[in-house]
Image 1 (cartoon, rainbow, N blue to C red):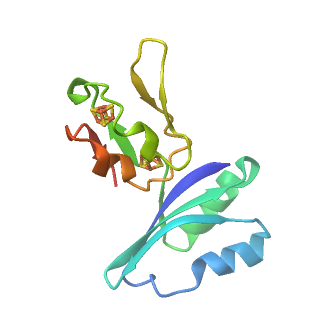
Image 2 (image 1 turned 120 degrees about the vertical axis):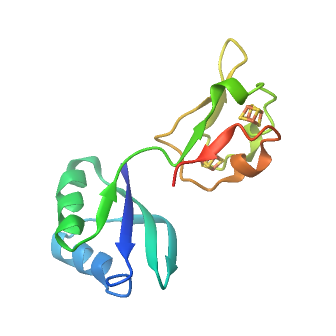
Amino acid sequence: MKKLILNFGAQIVNEAITAKIILKHKVLINILRANVQEEGGVFLIEVPDEHCEEIRAAFESEGVKVERGKLIEKQTPSCVNCCACYSTCPVGAISIDEEFEVQFDYEKCIGCLNCVDACPFGAIVIQK
Ligand code: SF4
Ligand code: SF4
């Protein structure tokens, strides 16, 4: 599965664009996070690998800005590998390597921000 970040502008945030695309393309879209306000909305969705480009194009044709990328990022110079973030991740995206350094798997991350709150050193920053 691939993750896409969808940015809906204020003019289209109340339209049923996601439902329309699911029905038209008959692709299962997993909505992992949604933050909808009057001034716009941001969705984090997961789509099957083989449909990623098709679904990206479908959202873009409806005026939705689509991005891929990290939701959070560890700032390595600030991280002291205290592991306070490790157990807060609900999807196992944080691991400890053989050098006892904390590593993040950004493909697994669903952007819950638990680790951001848990880090006492502000070493994890929000990308979106
Ligand atoms: S944001 Fe949530 S899902 Fe992503 S690495 Fe941190 S705890 Fe895990
Ligand atoms: S809580 Fe912060 S300082 Fe500690 S290991 Fe995680 S990112 Fe590094």
